[in-house]
Image (cartoon, one colour):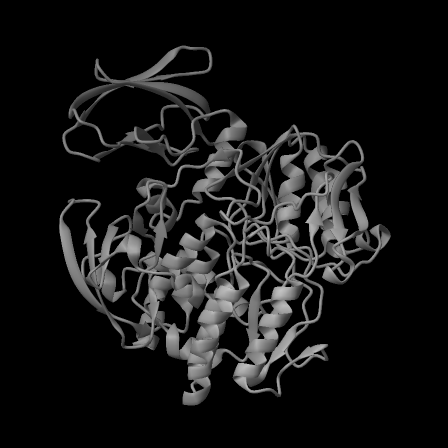
Length: 574
C-alpha cells in the first residue's frame, strides 16, 4: 500500500505536491532540537540517569523538573499529582518490559505541560513505528467555529474513494463525538504546543495517525450535500508523509541551505521569509557577518532601491535559535534603541537577571508597511522576531493563529534517560522591561504573539488552502497591504483568485435567496466599465466572469439583488 500511495502523487493533478513531498522527506531527517541549542542524547550531562532502572530514572527526572522548571507557578503545574499518576504507569511498563509504553507515558507526562521547549528526544523510532506509522489517508484541522474539517486529502487516498472530501465536517470517531476524542497531541513527537489553539491543531493532526492496520469508523457531514455518512478506514504505511505535510501546515518546509529568502510579489509587494536564527555568533559584530543576517540586509536594500513600500514577513515554521541574532536583525526595522528581553539565571540563583538584550538601529532601514504571518510552529526566537515586529507602528501580525508561546531559555544540559532517551526543557526565563515573564503561555494556555488581524479560518479557506493550493494567509496579508478586499469575505461572498488575470470566480456563501444578481464593476475614477446579471440557481454556485476586455489595475464592484448588496475591490494583473 505504501509504494502505490506514494506513486499516485506523480500524476498531473498532483504536480504541485511532488516538490513539497520531496522537501518533506528531506526535512524529516533534521534533528528536532537543531535550532533550540540543546545537547543531543549521549552528551555528558550532570543529569545522567541513563544507567538507572526506568522507575528510578523517572523519579530522578521528576525531581529535576519539579525543582528546575522555571514556569511551575505560571502554568500551575501540579507536580505531586503528575508523579502520582505517571509513576504507577511507568512501574507497570518496567514490570512488563514494554519500551513503547514507557516512551508513550513519558510523552504524556511531559506534554501535559504546555511548553514547546519541553521535548523527549533520542531513540523513539520504535514508538513511532508502533503508534503512529499509519495514516487514514487524510488530515484534519479545527476551524474558527469549533468544527473539525478535512484538510489535506489526496485524490488517490482510500478516504477519498470512500466519499470524504476537503471541507467535510468530521462528526464522530469510533462512535465518540469529535470534541471528546481525547488528548492525542501527546503522540506528536516533533512538537509540543503551548496554546489552546496549537494543542487543538496537534490533537486533530495526530487523530489521523494510528498503528498500521488499525481501523476507524468515521461519520462526517458532506460540505457539498450536507448529507451525513459513515465510513470505515484502515490505517496504512505512508512513510509519515501525511504527518509531515500536516505538521508544516500552511508553511513551506525550510530550506536548510538558505534560511532567508526574498522576492517581489505582484503589485510591487515585497516578501521576506525567515526560517530560523541559526547563527552561532556571540557578539553583534559576529551576527552581522553571518550569511542569514547579510541576506536580510540585502533584502532590505533591494526593497528600498526598488521603492517597495509594502512587505510581507513570513515567520511560519520558524525554528528559533539565537536570541542575539533576532535582536540584532530587528535593528534593520527600528529607528531607535529598543528593549528586547531580560534573561535570567536558573533556580540556582533565584532567576535573577543576568543580562539584557536591546535592538539597536542599523542601516539600511525598512520604513514601509509590514504584514507578518506566524503560526503555532513559530517558536522561541522566531517569536522574538514576531514580538518585535508587533511593537512597530508600521507592522501588524496577520494570521490564522498566534505563535507557539514558548520563549524560555533552553541552552542547558539535558536529562539523560535509559533506552537512549533524553529530555530537554527550559531552565531560565525571558522577562519584559517590568521583569514579568514574556510570551510563555500561562495556566489558561494564553500567550505568545497573537494576531493583530485574524485571518478567518473557515471551510472556504480550508478548501482554498488544501484543495486549490491557495496560500490564504499570504493573499490576505497582500490584500490588506494593498487596501483591497481579502480573498475571504466572512460568511458572505468570495471572489477568487484575487488578484486575477483574465477571469475571476464569484461565490455566494450561505445565501438564502437564489435568483438574479446584478454585478457592476467600476474603475478607480468611478466610471462604470462592466455590468452583468448573474443567475445563482443553487446554493454555493460559482460564477466565472471573463475580464479580458478590462485593463490591468484595481477595480471596485457591487453585487446586488435588491435586498442584498455587497461591495468590494479586486485586482487584475498584467
